[in-house]
Length: 503
Image 1: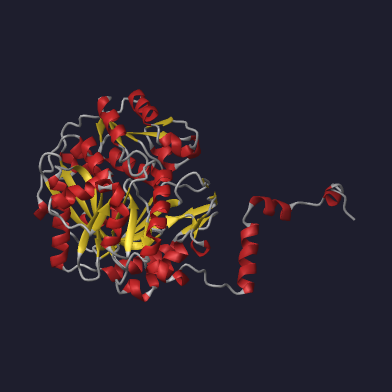
Image 2 (image 1 turned 90 degrees about the horizontal axis):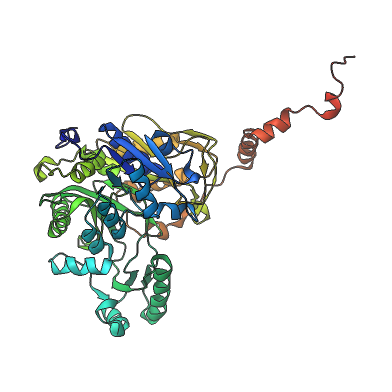
């Protein structure tokens, strides 16, 4: 499919080298496009990532250090020093880590490099959920009924009561579901506020809160936007992200099966309007809570590339990383909304190293064998390699499987086959759980909501294997490891001492 304004139309890049300040699959993903455009891709990495795919494919890789592996990727000074040393003219932060850190963005620009993302002021505005919410409401866009602690801390509890149950308590600086509490019994409100405050302080160093009306069984719908910072903004349609566990996404798809053409246009234009109201620059995502009656409310804006951006790329034909680079190079968007088209249906599955049957507990181990799925309409985004290690140092997401079909039914069918064909031995993953989830009649019918997995815990349970099958699998697994094979093939010392003697 032809995408609007391909990135090859940039005649003179203001930078020759782009440093990726991230790791894993997103580092590989960004490096791939950087190199495709004829630019050099540099990388920083912690020793724990020394043998990964991203390090192997980078044109230049610099080791960074920290008290923990995560701390190294949060060390902005060290990253900027590495960028200067390799002559990088731009830094791509990926997602997570420093991608939405105003101070890092300012430091990159102060060092004379391009930050591939929005302006520091835009990061600051949308990174604070309370400020973002106030801005969006003042601009005339829909937000859920709420009480914000900053407005009057002394009356926060009472104002929250007046919003009514059920309530959702959220940290102002939060993300990833940390510190969120659902309150259905208002007699427990003060207790839950303190718990949420404690978690907000622990995870984000910020205990400020707000409460909003909790929409029962809502959908989570987000809209991809692109802005050039010169006045032009387009949306690249929506993504359905309602299949979640612990407020974290597992399966995303585009387009949403819940939206009529009229609702799609309304919610997408609302997102584009919010981005226009701040003169948005680069790629971003506006997220909404979508109610059963078709009402929707602003949730937050993520001022970065999202984990699930590939489903948008698959239905639109637009390389979002390439567009990020174009915009960072100072290019105007160069096309309007009419040029952005959607074709077919795409689904993304987050492959986690975790055991869904044990309350989604993370797993670790050596990657003994890895055979990603292949075939028409199948895309595998990953930063892992056979022989590598899955550790507890980072988030348990190790890969993303993305499938495209002419319609939703074909996409789900391809997803099921691709999950079945995925071979990853050495640590337990959630591929079996994902297959059970998409086979559920509610998912097939498109009837999903953010609380579905909590309401249907049986989907996470492992089907029970017959004892003889389990014994056979254990035997095969044992004989697949080098120490066990060596022990099985070893000649006992007594027999070895006989040398070449024969009777």
